[in-house]
Each structure stands twice: as structure tokens, then as C-alpha cells.
Image 1 (cartoon, helix red, strand yellow):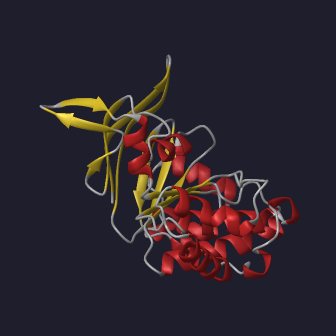
Image 2: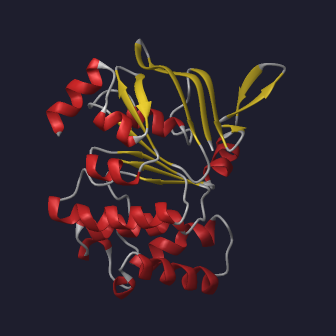
Amino acid sequence: MIQAINVHKSFGQLEVLKGINLEVQQGEVACLLGPSGSGKSTFLRCCNHLEKVTAGRLYIDGEIIGYRERDGVLYELSEKQAAQQRRDIGMVFQSFNLFSHRTVLENVIEAPVQVKKQPVEVAKKRALELLDKVGLAHKADAYPVQLSGGQQQRVAIARAVAMEPKLMLFDEPTSALDPELVGEVLRVMKELASEGMTMLVVTHEMGFAREVADTVYFMDGGQVVEHGSPQQVFDHPQHQRTQAFLSSLL
């Protein structure tokens, strides 16, 4: 589902990604771990062309993201074409990014109706099913300001899933939440994982990564330093930087 080949990303003189190579198979949950500033969120944003790759190739489901290739030369897609690719990639951010002037239900049906041209009644039926799944059907007519942070983040997940993406990207989805609200969001993510959703998750929740991930990637200084199963990386880290990072957390 994701194939990164020597992916680089620079902001001016600052090189943030220094040759990322990784693969995420369909139905797999992969977690990106590492200290702040290691390039995790930047790589995630490259996966849906919110950030443009400076060098290398990044494929989503066999299709190069943000570009088309002709005779070995890359040509950037138009914004409309890039948006078309993004339709199949759900993303949940640290901040919930809900429309404050729309109800919970209106937030969830917005993209299916506007982008996918679903009939409103069809979109509403699906939205209510998803809100029930994340435990918020009773909040369908509430506004975001009336919800806790954990509730808002669960609405954001329902909104992303409503587009029926083939890939879900999570950028530290619990980092803005009070500790007691983290569990309710992780529960929804675990359920998605159990249903076979392909997920790439930037997280500091080590328990979640250990329990749910198929593969863990540890990043530092813009590179993947180490990767493997959660058991390999957590219990038998090979790289000194991974060992130091985990010992400071666990």
C-alpha cells in the first residue's frame, strides 16, 4: 500500500527527510516512532502530497503520489489531480480540524456529499452508522464546541472513514488530549485495525504500538534507524539510538 524509495524532503537548506525507505502492506498497521523533529509527521504529510517530496519516489497502492512519471521524468500533478488522489487517503491530525459551524453529523457527511456526490440520505445513514461505531451517535446534532477533545477526535476519525479510504494516516492523534481521553480514541483505532484498515500511525503511545502494530519504524534525524515487529524493536532494539529513546520512555 505504501512504498517509499529513498524519499528526501527539504525546506530550503534544511533537509528533514534523508532517504526514507519503507513499505506498508495492505491491511497492515505500521507505527512511526521517534523523538520530536525526527521527520515522522513530515513523512506522513508526504504520503498524501500535503508536503512535496524533494527527491525519491513515494507510491501509494502502486501509484506515485503527487506526480506522474514519463520517460523517467516526474511531472507534478495539478492541485485538482492531487486532490483526486487524496480522496482515497484518510488523515487524522493532532488538532481535530472539525468545521465549528457544522453539527457532528454535518461534519461527517460533508466530504461524501460534496466530493463523492453521494445522495444526502445515503451519506447520513452511513454517517450515523460510523458515529454509532465510535460511540457518538447520541451527539449527531451537537456542535464541536460541545464535545470533549476525545469526542472531537473520534468524530474526526468517523469523518475520515466516511470517505471509505484505502489508507488511513494518523498524525499523533492523541497528543492534544488529556490523558484520561486517550483511551477512547485508541479503542476506535484498534477496532479499525482489527477490521483490516491499512494504517500508518505517528504516535508516542508505546502501548498502542506494541499491541496493535504489525511493524514499527523508529526514526531519528530524518532517517529510519531501525524497524521490525514490535517485539523485535521494543524488546531487542539493535541500534543505540533506539535503545536510548525507549529507555527514556519505558
